[in-house]
Image (tube, rainbow, N blue to C red; front, top):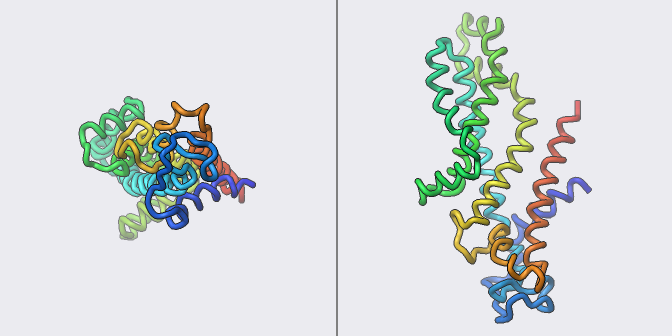
Amino acid sequence: MRRALYAVPLLVALCGPWLASSGDVLHGVSYDPETGWLGTDFAGRDVWQQVLLGGRELVAVMVLATAGAYLIGVLWGLTAATARRRLADELLMRPLDLLPAVPSLFLLLLLATLFPGGGLVWIVMLVHLPDIARLVRAAALEAAHGPVVEALRLQGESWWRTTVRYVGGSVARTLAADAGTRLTGTLYLAAAASFLGVGVSPDAADWAVMIERNRAGLLLNPWAVLAPALMIIMLSVGLNLAFDRALRRP
């Protein structure tokens, strides 16, 4: 049951475009609950076809933005934690202290306004970068200044083995615990951006866009809103439960 919570929306998102009919099927009647499996949307399009087409980009943004933020944030945090001089640590971390003071959604909108062609993946990645770098630095400080690291440096071990393999390995479980909430946080930001029209066209086949454009006809055909909303909720809850279960294993 837990696996189905995230497996179903992931399968729909990844395989849906191949299962959907080619092109948008226009029926001419908006919010017709009798047409197709789930009726039609505000433009008279088949809701089921839109659900099949609307998840791939959202999931792609979630995965790519989270992976990119971890890749840069982990290296950033480890470099700051293992810096031998406090000045280097300060120069790396102090600029990042400014960004968490701004609410994430507001920061996303601000970055989208400043860099309109930057792409949603890069914008969401920049939003998450400060938190990840700060988390990694805080978790790695003890190991980074311990006797093992000093011994590795005296033996002439490389930066990669000392910093990434040893110090990075010491924070692996902390990062795994953070990954579940980080993924769902990225999903929330990507869906919120699409809901507000950031980075997507107003009539795009996107789960968040479907919710925004069809909410006016909720009473006429509730599936036009409920179907994409259920996909997002199932994916968010399912991923959190999956990571929690994985972390409980010895």
